[in-house]
Amino acid sequence: MGTLRPLTAAEALAAVLGAAPALIVASGAQAERRFWEFFTVTIRNRNTRAAYARAAAEFCAFLDGMRVTSLTAIQPIHVAAYVEALGTTHAPATVKQRLAALRMLFDWLVVGQVLPFNPAASVRGPKYIVKRGKTPVLERADARLLLERIDTATVVGLRDRAFIGLLVYSFARVGAAVAMEVGDFYANGWRWWIRLREKGGKHHELPAHHNLEAWLHEYLEAAGIGEEERSPLFRSAMGRTGRLSEKPLVARNALDLVQRRAKDAGLGGRICNHTFRATGITAYLENGGTLEMAQAIAAHESPRTTKLYDRTADAVTLDEVERIIL
Image (tube, rainbow, N blue to C red; front, side, top):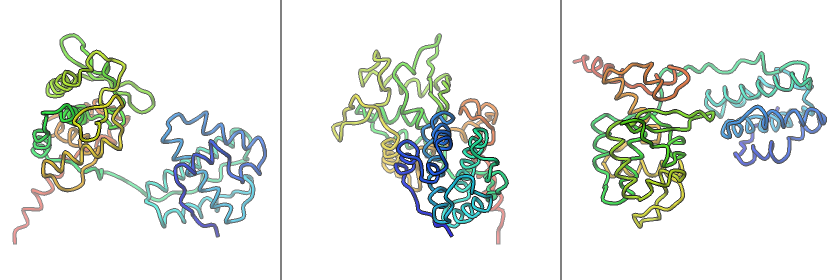
């Protein structure tokens, strides 16, 4: 029976971009070429490529333990055994993602006439239905408190207020926010707009909320970068100097930023980068906004994704529970 060994992201990528797994190599030059093409030709998103590479490398390592030495020897029972083993150590969502990666890879190999059939096509993954997201959401009063408690006497404070304000008022992903350039905040007629680079290389443009517009102008003026259109909009801080560098803020430092500001405001509990996206969507819907328009602002492909960030039903549930009086 094969055993699972966790692979780091670097190991998973090395299996694709450095050397193909031994099982792939043993299956011949056509199989190896087709394997490489799957990751380099069909997948453009770096994170997706890393996740799918991890799944392929881990599955090949699992097959080594089962003494499967060629692609044509892989049967549905091997894939099912992998899924079963994976389910003992990973969440259902991860298992489904790994299985989806294998299905796509094998489909690609079938089309390339490397395999006669897709051994993962008939294998069922675990049931996993999500109707409510797990992202922590702030009450509107707490969100206002957090923003008001930010010390804006320094340019770093102005940056932090503008950054968090962007997440709240545009429902922006952190990856899109840190990728913004100065020129992505621009005048369009008498209003100012923002441009976000979303997943898949899509540009998403929308008008800036009046608070966000004011905060971005204050930040740009204090930073003195308003004319540097092709430079990073949100820049990293230079230690504790209160000054900014010329380097862009990165996502991992953005998490430190929001958690530090939440702590300064005396807000406990889990706070993450997605908290403000979910907070903005919930506040919008509570104020009479529609799910369809929230989906458009958030640039979600499906309203079901937007609904995961909606916590408007939480208060109703609490009110009903409080009717239980003993």
